[in-house]
Each structure stands twice: as structure tokens, then as C-alpha cells.
Length: 517
Ligand code: PHE
Ligand code: NA
Image (cartoon, rainbow, N blue to C red; front, side, top):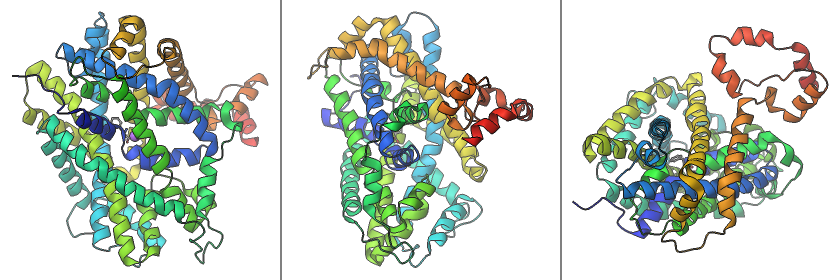
């Protein structure tokens, strides 16, 4: 039997771009940008793309193709083949587990998108007030209420979407390629239409409630570079986190896809193309839809106060109504359809490491691999689905979608440059490549990327009270103590059960100092 491989170069690039382009581009990026100062966020973001994003893409693509030469299709085996110590095999387990942990809630959001497409078609939001639309969402995720008459509607559609993923995955790489070839062009088409709407909205949003609302305020806020916050670690952390999430690095997903690339086929140009395609969708399309449209109707101040994940589901369907019934239905289909395609091409990617591992280890076939993956995702996902209202979702996202990515990326960067060896690694990157990666990247991959990753990790470990780095540093210089934020990793790890003791141990005068600022 011939080795399993991608059907065509176009299929490979679209599948990889589909993996990267996801809910993060449309839901996470605009919110991160707004919460971190708009134009102040963009500079660290682009620097992180060049110094961590691109290097990690090259590391992961080349590690994956290297593993594929030895018939390894998941990070435990791929990493085991790169470093002799046994530990790397266990590090590689992260690269399977994180995918299942993330896909569990990712497919839940995917199912919301699908349901909202249906509601847009059936005109559910017609004539609803802003708060009606918002309440519609909160009652949807309260699993005991239903908007279509189906009991446990939210759970029902979640399982349906999981089943769809299982079905496609059981068709193998060919199925994934097909979905990417249909989904990616449609996603870009839908995104461009909505972005044109966002960019041409101008001051048309003169609603009676917000006569000053102007879509351009949103765009100016995002795109006026500000240098003042470059010294703020909080902004850097957020930028690095977004780059990881959006490029799908630090999860083992890319290595798995790359393991099905033939030995002499280009990876350098492919990796860079897929990465830039993701950035185009994120930076151009991702910032031209929600923010300008919301700013155009509700004003920039509203956006700054309400920027959050909910905007996509709780606000957009209301704003679309301002364009009339037909346009509202049409826009709703475009917007939620786009989210659905973005989501499914990513969740399929998250299924492949598990399937590749079970095949390599136990010879499991596609069907068995796909069904067991779905069952695991369901088990891990049900708590976040059933307990959504209690904030389980955010806590879970933090560990599965942020912390483990940084840790894994740091370890794989060390393995690649320092254990496997940068010379061998650089050869792997350039073998069969259609472009010449600048020599400077050899240096960056060896020194800069691991160093930056280490800094990101350490800062996450000791994040100070309310993320106020400058004030906390000056407090320490004034003889105070370093008060950890609730979000700091150290506190998160030690916190459970000890919350009260730790809280009372915090020096109140330090908090007063920080709060006075
Ligand atoms: N990159 C995807 C997004 O932007 C998320 C993702 C992470 C997908 C890791 C696959 C693996 O939404
Ligand atoms: Na992305």
C-alpha cells in the first residue's frame, strides 16, 4: 500500500491554511486588539509574527516532514525521532492531548455558528431589540431552554457537529482536502463581502441612539500605531498568545499535517504562504467586520467597553437588522457561514494527531480513529457545554488554549535547535524548498525564538496584580512586595483550595499602592 499523502500541493496549502484560519481570526483577534490598545497592539503583534510565528511554522513543518520519512505521524513519535532522550516522547503527548482538549470546546462554538446560520435564514432575529438578541444567546447556552423546540438544543447541535467532524475525518486526508477546497474560497468570499460593507459603512450608522457613531473611528483606533505601550509586557503577552493561537503553533497539529508531505516536496514556501494567508484573513478581514460595523452603529466607546467574545453572536445579528430584512438574512448567513467554515477546517486538523498516533501505535483504521476521537472530544467537552454559565469555559480555554501552547512551543524550539541541532534542522527546512529563507532566520530560530518563548512563559508565571507591570515594578523599587495577579500561572497552579489563605496573605498596602495608580 502506498504511503498516505496529500493529493495535491493546492490541497495541502488549503488544508494548512484552513487549519490556521479559524475562529481565532474573527472572534479572538479583534477583541485582543481592542482590549490591548488598538494601534498599540499591532506593532508587538507583527514583531511576534516575524520572530516567533514564522520560526515556529518552519520548525513544525520541517519536524513533521522529517517524522513522515520514518512513518511517524504524531508528535510523540516525531519528537522521539529527533531527540534521543526518552522524555521527548512524553513531551510529544502534549501534541495529541491539547488538540482534543481544544477541539472539545471549539466544536461547541462551531455548532453555535451553524445554528445561527439557520436562525438567520428563518428570520428569528427580525424585529428583535439589541437586548433581545443578546438574551437569545444567553438562553441558548442555558441548555434547558430551546429556540427551535428541540429539547437540549445546544447539546443536540454540538453532537451533530461533532458527528459531522467524525464523518469527514473517517474519509481520511481526501475528505479534509475536499472540505478545505470548498470552505476556504467561500470563507474568503464571504469575508470580503462583509469587510467591504464594514469599510464602506462610514457614518451611515447614524442611529438615533448614537448620532455620533462612525465606522471609521473603529478602523482608526485599530490602525493608528501607538508606541507608548511597547514597554508594557501585558501587551506583548497578549500579542504572543494571539500569534500562537491563530497560527495553530504549539499544538502538534501542523507537525501531523506535515508528516503527510512527501520527502522531497517544498515546505519553506508552503509554510510561509499558509502563514501569510492566515495573517491576511486575520489582519485585513478580521479587523474590517465586527469592529467597524459595531463602531458604526453603537460608537467606538461602546466597542471599547463591550469588546468581547459575545459581540459576534450577541450584537452582530441585531446590527444586521439595520440593513433591512433580506440583507439581514443574507449577512447573517455570510457571517455565521464564514465562522462555520473557519471552525470546521480547524477542528478537522485537531482530529488528525490522535488518529495518526493510534494508527502508528496500534494500526487503527480511519473509522476507528475518527470515532474514538469524537468520543474523547465529547467526554472532554460536555462539562464546558453543560456548565457554560459558570465560567468553566474560560478557565478551560486558558489552560488548554494558552498555557499548554506556550510550554509546548518552548520545548519543541529547544529540541529543534539544541538537541536535534540547528544545522540539521536548517537543512531540513531548506531541503527541496522553492524559496530561500533568509540566513538570519537560522540565528533567529536558534537564539531569538527560544529566548522570547522563555520570556513569555516567565511573564505568564509571575503576572502582577491586575497586569500592571510598570506600577508593580515601581512598587517593588519602593520596598513593596510583588503581588501576583489571579491570572498568574504560579497563583493558578497553587491556588486551588488555598484561595482564601493566599488572598489574606497579600499585603493590603501593596494593593492600595497599585490601586491608587
Ligand atoms: N488557528 C485556529 C484559529 O485561529 C485555532 C487552532 C489552533 C486550530 C490549533 C488548530 C490547532 O482559530
Ligand atoms: Na488563525
